[in-house]
Length: 78
Image (cartoon, rainbow, N blue to C red; front, side, top):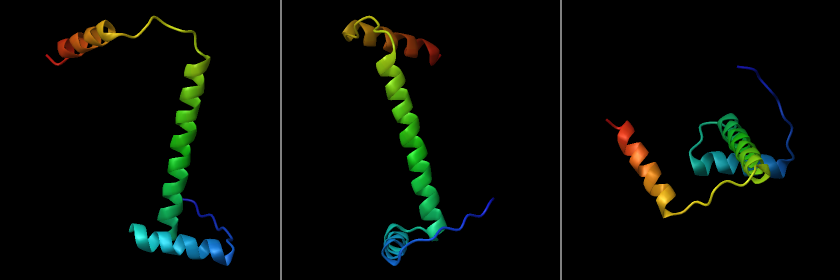
């Protein structure tokens, strides 16, 4: 694992320390890693949403569409 040192103003360091204490993180590093993971997930989701918005429209999704999906899912269960 690599190490990265960051500098924070006192107000932000106090906030991080409070979050570590209140949310059950063992260290400030754990808290920062969790924030970074959440940001990665957010960016991935945003990319998927943008790709979906830019894609060509498909057929309408109605009750019959979901019935077909349920039937296919039931067949794969064995």
